Amino acid sequence: MKKTNLENIEAIAFVVILSINCMILSTSQVLVNTCASSSLLNVLFITIIILIVTFIFCLLSKQFLGKDLLDISEFLGGKPLKIIIGLIFILYFLFRASVFLKKLSNCLQIVYYPMTHIIFIVSLFCIAAGIVVNLKNNSSFKSAIFIFPILFVTIILIFIGNSKNFNFENIYPLLGNGVKTTFFTGLSNIFAFCGFIYLFFLPSKLKNPEQITKISLISLALSGLFLLFSCANIMFLFGDQFSNTELFPLYVSVRSIEFGTFFQRLDSVFLFLCVLGFICALSLNAYIVTDILRNITCSSDSKPFIFTYLLAVFALSLTLKLNSTLTSLEDNISKIFFIILAIVIPFIILISANIKKKIIGGNL
Image (cartoon, rainbow, N blue to C red; front, side, top):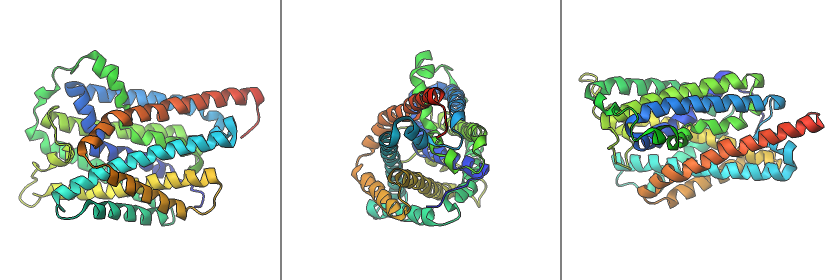
């Protein structure tokens, strides 16, 4: 795998497409279920928090310009720490990709392919992602540039199209289940920004690594805006009563939209865009994982890693049988893992690396 030199727009699209796929398939619904009528307030709150956290991490990374978390881990604790950190993040990325793959595959099977075994739907996603990630010229990142604006515009059109069916009283009471749920326990909803965790592996791939702060803040602000529209659409249309765990609420909401006589099956278009977006996100996920594996094994050939990883995603997604299991994993386990891996571990590594660099000086 050749060294990637990403333009700013490619890096922004990379982070945004990974976040909004999670938001479409699951995290928007989780957030509404958690905070009820205070969902919009919670979205604004966690968006501000993630931007502040990102800015702090960017400040801590200034001494390591152009270095990703693996490079900094190696500086701090040598090769063993680098390998441990790499493997931990690989397991997390594998877990998230498998959950979302099964969730979207279940939806496709129920809506369009009830007679098709789930194994074929899952395999097609993995094959498509494998093809995209193996293409040259940063194809995965360039496809993200094309797809994420379309998804962004689509969610706004869905909001506008559903506005006539909205019940704006669902916003009351403003604090939903209380201050504690909105601002304290609701802080765990920061996991909705799935793309944030990938930022730690982005600096070494940027054409202009000194602009990582700008790239990070813009991409997360766009993700926050998308989350706001997604949650508003769900809350105003369904409130916190949506309980279908097989079909994600944004897809269900599209079924009631009609833009004239000609555009009457927008749900099919939306699901098609979701499929394209997920293939793009899965290929980017696979790219980052294979790049981590290449880094920690000092290998020059990434193709065996791509095949092995996508096979692992395929196998794990098939082991997730029940929708109740998927919901439980998303509501509980994902939040805990995200807080530990995206906040706690990087903070400890960056603080410790800065202290070590200040003591011993020198470069990585």
